[in-house]
Length: 537
Ligand code: G4P
Image 1 (cartoon, protein in one colour):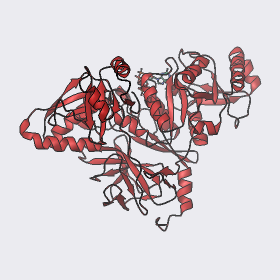
Image 2 (tube, rainbow, N blue to C red; image 1 turned 180 degrees about the vertical axis):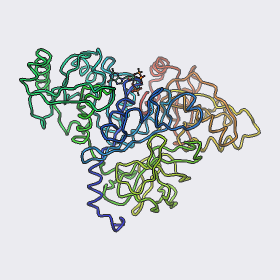
Image 3 (tube, helix red, strand yellow; image 1 turned 60 degrees about the vertical axis):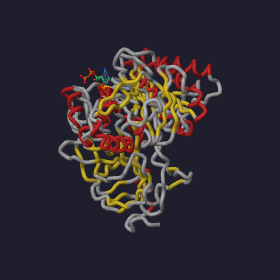
Image 4 (cartoon, protein in one colour; image 1 turned 120 degrees about the vertical axis):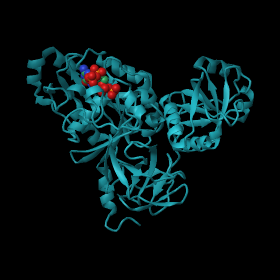
């Protein structure tokens, strides 16, 4: 036992048990920024809405990484937001969306213990939500569903549940049920067995948008007299749901078979407090994580964590590199010596920070479930493990299915050496996937990315940090499959297909222009191994 002597394992256990570390998965415009602000407001992490990140005039605490980001008005960096709620500490990790959707967005999901799937009530499941959901499913992350914008005309509530169940095969178990159809939102009936009161919670709009909404508990009689048919219908539908076994079951939720579902309106702050309560009541706290070798590291053992994101030059006034670490076990204390599992190198953690948009605070101690940023911990790469005491190596982070491909062309061949060094560094950081094909040779790497912004970041950083100007020629591929040497040989001359190697993990990829070409290849070459990559494929 090599914990700091002043830290008892029971303190680590109780601090870990208080943590809820999650991310919101959604499609652009479903209301993620609005919900984040509303959650932060509940946790009193901010005093007025608009301080987290938002659009236009709501833009407040945003990172200002690279002028590119400012020009486009988007936030590239993953912020994590921490606040207290009831007796818990909530860690909300940002999943960049919109134009900044990238592999980092997926990687955030390797660092959470639960996810909130945010749906626009008028639109239901949308493409980006589906992709992110697939990552949650693959990583067995329990998902809570929040059906947002119920204050506006929406799909039918039962239809939304059916859509979730039929399209992604996870059963929604509503923990609240709306009184009033979309656009006529009066409140909710509560359906958790631990909330046995009859009646409903009535919501009332607070003036000025996303400030704390007023809510009150109405008895069944009051609800019936004030909301008549709408209340009667909600009660009836809620009873019907019980008959179809759509009640919360903790085990099934944790196993990913069901998704507890809430109705709300983030903009008016309706249902946001209930979402936080639900996270506290049912979302898992940090659990013993499995190592590369299949052994479990107890949360109360020595300190350990892994890097899920690494970013250089986040802010022009601090030209530095930040490695975002998710703590898995033990107590982190600023200044402690940790070892990088992959290299065996020890490093000090004098410069450890928490991030919230562009504001950075020094962190003195942190616990399992927390996210810390290590400044200038050079040599730390995405996926690396750091630990104190007994050695542990967490499994490498997966490479996610790229959907954008481009040939990277050096514009100044006298800078070839810098160019190669830059590419190696950016590949190692996980900025972009670097591939090579026999057809193009080693001098022209091909970049593969989940979002096109990854190309722009690569180009900008090659120029700024390595003085190696380059440009990207887009290639006509949209998806890839993992194959083997035999598959590579068989498909080498297949029209429209290109075979790549990915030195980062030694994988052989076959890239296709569209899913129809993939299908014809599959039927023309039934013996060729073509395995889908994680998400999006
Ligand atoms: P995102 O981060 O998921 O992209 O979505 P964001 O929060 O920016 O919300 C997208 C739009 O939906 C915003 O309107 C926002 O005000 C609105 N919205 C979010 N939640 C609700 C809700 O519960 N009810 C209603 N009616 N609207 C909601 P916008 O006009 O695009 O932007 P803004 O000018 O209001 O910022």
